[in-house]
Length: 336
Image (cartoon, rainbow, N blue to C red; front, side):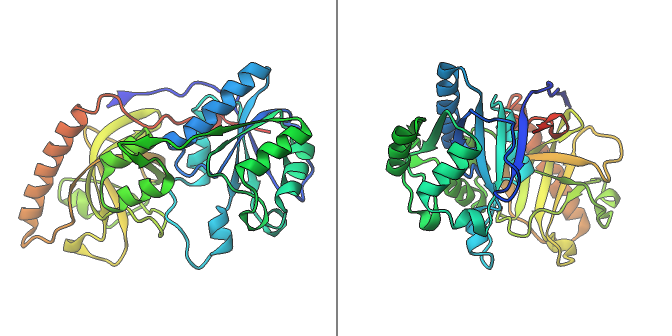
């Protein structure tokens, strides 16, 4: 177990829609624009560009993101594996040192704005931006017709700065949300960690299971992840954040072949933890894939393997130092 604390923050969270009155909070900021799914290292380069420009101009720095994800809005029949929910994303953004985040409701009205109107109505009139930072491949506006060149030209015309972050490569691979999703789908938790800059995590409320783990000597905290989660099924070394403390552990994500009830669950066993977690919201970070799910001939064989899994997880996590996602406490975020 490791003690952790979340310092108080002046971070301002604005949830906005075009049909709502323009908010006062974060007006005049330098804004990092993007979807920021996962807030990976490439996203952080955009955020750092916004922060550097804001510091130079003496302005606040904020992120503007869009919910639901535009891809989900346009193709609801093919939902995507999201790396972070909107609340997880906001907690990650707040921990970067930004002054705030704007979560714009992505609806028909916003989707129908041509690039020039998005700049004029949202960035200039609504938020009076001092500057904008984007990734090299940023596209925006109706039909994704707006490009970084469009944005740069509009900035010159309307009087705000534009900073464009170049692609970020890791061992020749471009850091992107898609690359992280692919790594997790293969069970490559360490690869995802390298691309993200932190161990990938999921948050959720602990729900009741079938209590079979307790009977086996391994009581678990059970979470139901988004049905679109494509994390490879199997056993992982994990670290769990619970009410300001962290516990190392081992977790199974999948259908549990020995006792398959048809429900996909994330079941985490926390080392050296005593207490009741039902109804609490916890964060589970993934450090290494230990093995795929297996069906054993006898319960005793399963228990032996769980003992081996726990030993392996302890060894891996002992070498992970204090690594854990930097997350702001959502209860401390001020809403603008």
